[in-house]
Image 1 (tube, rainbow, N blue to C red):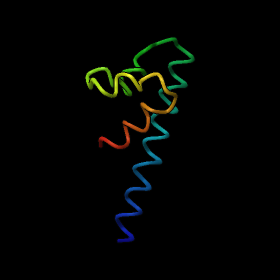
Image 2 (tube, rainbow, N blue to C red; image 1 turned 120 degrees about the vertical axis):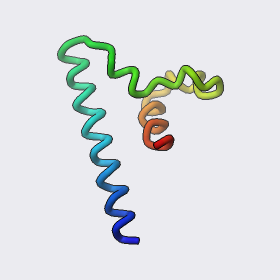
Image 3 (cartoon, one colour; image 1 turned 135 degrees about the vertical axis):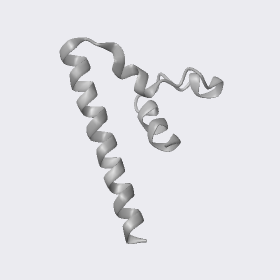
Length: 64
């Protein structure tokens, strides 16, 4: 059980670091590819929640 919690923690931290680094790259270069990481347009119900801040990141962690 400890190993599962440890692996989940490592995965969450790695996901946050990746998202933050991509956001920094987007802000520095203006490249909109960061948006594709959190794209929820292909799910009809979630398309309406796409504008809520943090919803894309939460969806990204839940679906994996």
